[in-house]
Amino acid sequence: MMGSVTFPDGTTIPALGMGTWTLGDRADRRAREIAALRAGLDQGLKLIDTAEMYGNGRSETLVGEAIAGRRDDVCLVTKVLPSNASRRAMPASCRASLRRLGTDRIDLYLLHWQGGIPLDETVEAFERLKQDGLIGAWGVSNFDDDDMAALSRLAPAGACAANQILYSLDYRGVEFDLLPADRRRGVVTMAYSPLGQGGELLRAPVLARIAARHETAMGPATPAQVALAWVLRRPNVVAIPKAGSVAHQRENAAAADIALSDDDLATIDRSFPPPTRKIPLAMI
Ligand code: NDP
Image 1: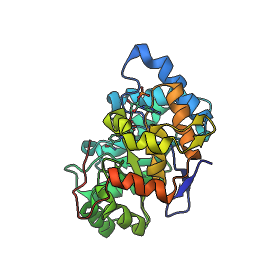
Image 2: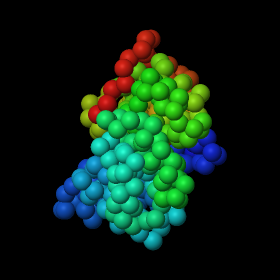
Image 3: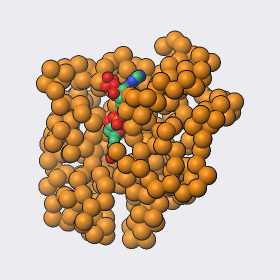
C-alpha cells in the first residue's frame, strides 16, 4: 500500500514519489525518461519532484510532457532558486515553472536552499503566490534545525509545509535533532538522494541480507527497495528516488510493499549506526 503524509492544513501527499534531477539533460534519453515517469505514475508514484535549476528548466519541461493529460493525478513539487526568492523575482520564476510544467498550479513550491534574500521577504512572496492560487503550499530545502527555528519565528504557524533534505542510510545525522523537531513543527520531511545516488550504498551487504527476507508484488526484494522502505519507516517522511528507466521505477514503487521488522531495523543499525550527537545537515 502506498502511504501518505499530511501537511498542517490537512492536505495529504504520497509518501513515495519520483525525483527528476538530470532527467531531460540528454536528448537521446528523453523518450526513455518520459516513459519511466509515466510508468512510475501508473505504479502509484504520484508525487514528482523537480526544480527550475535542474537542466536550467529542462527537467520541468520533461515533467510537463510526462504528465500531459494527467495533471490532476500528480502532486507536483518544484523549487525556486535562492537568487529568485525575492518579492519581485519569485512570481516571474513561478510563472516560468508553470509554463514549462504545462499547468496553472504547483502543489508544493520550495526554496531550494537559503541564499542572500531575507527569509521574511521570501515568506511574503510565497504567501502571495498561495493567495493568488498559483501554489497550493510552500516549503524549504536544505534547512538545518537552527534555520527551521528561525523560519518558524517569522512565518505564520503551520505555513511551511515541508523541508526537503538529504536523508538516507548513509546520512542519518538528521535523526538526532532535525527530523523530530520538524515533526513537532508539523513540517513534512522530504528525503532526497534516498538511494545514495545509486552508488556504494546499494552494494552494502546488509541491504542484500535484509532484502533476502522480504518479498514484494514484483518478486524477491532488492537492496534499493530496502533502502527506500527504511526511509519510509518513519511517519511524516516522503522519499523521492530518481530513476531513469521503467524497470527502476517499477522496482521503487514496489518498495511500498515492504514493512521492515524491529529485527531488520536493529540489523541495519549495526551497519549504519544512528547518530549520538548533533551532526550539521549535509547537502548535495
Ligand atoms: P537517488 O538516491 O534517488 O539515486 C538515483 C540513482 O539511483 C540513479 O543513478 C538511478 O539510476 C539509481 N536507481 C534508481 N532506482 C534504482 C533501483 N531500483 N535500483 C538500482 N539503482 C536505482 O539520487 P538523487 O540525487 O537523484 O536524489 C533523488 C531526487 O531528490 C533528485 O532526483 C531530486 O529530485 C532530489 N534532490 C534534491 C536536492 C535538493 O537540494 N533539494 C539535492 C539532490 C536531489 P537510473 O537513473 O539509471 O534509474
